[in-house]
Amino acid sequence: QLQLQESGPGPVKPSETLSLTCTVSGGSISNSRFYWGWIRQPPGKGLEWIGSIYYSGSTYYNPSLQSRVTISVDTSRNQFSLMLSSVTAADTAVYYCARHSDDLWSHFDYWGQGTLGTVSS
Amino acid sequence: DIVMTQSPDSLAVSLGERATINCKSSQSVLYSSNNKNYLAWYQQKPGQPPKLLIYWSSARESGVPDRFSGSGSGSDFTLTISSLQAEDVAVYYCQQYYNTPFTFGPGTKVDIK
Image (spheres, each protein chain N blue to C red):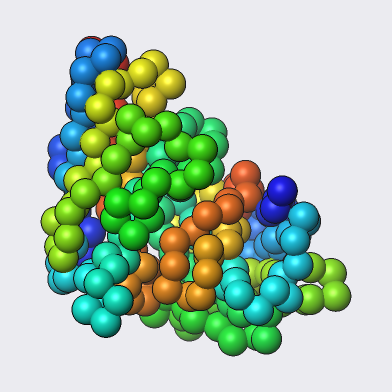
């Protein structure tokens, strides 16, 4: 059974960089069929797609965040990561990693449990 | 960006009764070359990640009870819970994956009356 698990170092201060990692188990991130994505949800609010990556490193970002986002992949560790720079309190959210069910233009079929990314001075 | 809207914002339905949630996209998410609607529905319970219910607007994910069904095409879609159960209390989101940026509706909260 595929499982995804988000992890991160803890709260970050405004203007710093939020860094999160998603570890995939029960399947290979190098499977050429799938894309992998990040989605976030501010407390009590809706869902926002941040971006997605292919095992080769090809990335697609939400234009609203593109200037601050970097998503990378480490196939040797079966992980992909999110870096969000110049954060503000508005970036406080639960961050989910998820798998596209097929190519990039497909629904998200597996999700991690989410991790709270807190921006606080 | 494709803007997704949902109605109602919330609804309360008696146990065993039907619940209907509507989703509208600002442009069609029907891809003519394969006749597929790039529209999914998710269920989210408090403290949990979203769970996929329906994809391609009407295909039910494996393991999802058959009381959940999706319909619609183009820009107008519906999620129906035919007989509401207590465990269906949740927020429901639609999502388009036709174009990047992929976008979600604002959610519809379903409660028991």
